Length: 535
Image (cartoon, rainbow, N blue to C red; front, side):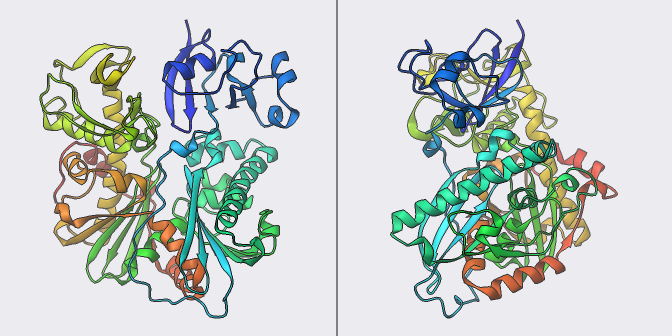
């Protein structure tokens, strides 16, 4: 019987189900929860999920759901089976997603702008997967509160290319992507003001940083040029307007500032990263890496900046891994193999039943398989007590068997999963090595590697070094800086001098397009090898 992939959001869990299995049954199969008071008989109308592509509503749904929900893609999980690969968002579970809001930054050179007593502002880190908003007192620069949620655009695809493709379908699709993200910013802004008892009319500034695709989609710009070589942005300069003109209803009179873009896949979030760590003032050679679907890499050679974007894919976010998921309750976040014939030691978010592996555990798994000789440097798996050959995709390491950790199903890491990690880590390392070549820098020259974002915050640096994700530096030289883009956004919010600096850096930074670099293919091929890379 034919099977299709159902992706369950916000966890990102993937499950292959046949055409006789309802979405409600699939949700229960992986241990997730959705309200269903009638037990799936179609009488309570509670098992609501947001589905893409949305099937035609059934008669039951037409009775139980309103027109607004139906038009928005809301369906009852008990009423639908899937006939193609589908995404379904389970509502009211985003609180369980582990969203990184905090970060560290270098001491600020710029004091808050004068003349803003009694005024407040909101800094927004508009990520592909998550959105984080910070409420600040503009007169002091102090943070009052922050709030975060999934980017609602995730229902249309996990990576920027799938969203660009969706936006290019027709004008309505692009409008839908824009509206969804602006409504979420409105929601977070309103929530912050309400919780902090700050009147919304005292918000005088709002700043947004994000990658180039998120920037274009939020502003309603045509993203078509980002989907085709040479990946030229429609807008590189910073953009300032009023909330009402952008489409933000919660802050109609507020000044809204969008940070500038460097290139098609290096946006204002990377510039905010540079700003927060002051990579432009580095006395030594340092690397800044933000690993996501697109890994942004910045090399500072004593203040001279070189950057690129590496198409790492979404393996490190769990999207292309057979039992991958986001950092949410039930996600394995760390793994260690003590004896190759025994079950591995696991650390599970929420200390509950494991359901899948998030990015940090994915890197741990490959590193531990390599350390124990269960894969070689080329990534080939070797049969052993827990490397079994009874999956549809050939050899697979048995992370969790039925009955272990109270699990009712197996969690495996397949040969294909290893290959996905090799491709992702190869892209990051190759991008780094290309920048090192053009800057005439050797590994021994690198004094620090700053890792930004959730993946960089939770990854075990020793596992990353073991598989050759980064140049081989001392462990203590790898520094997690958390949500560095958010930290940069805060500086842009309170200081116009910071805005002037970031706009100047945008013009001065040396950007390299990896796809057109002369020896990228050769560097990438070598970079996929699973070994700790030295010069």
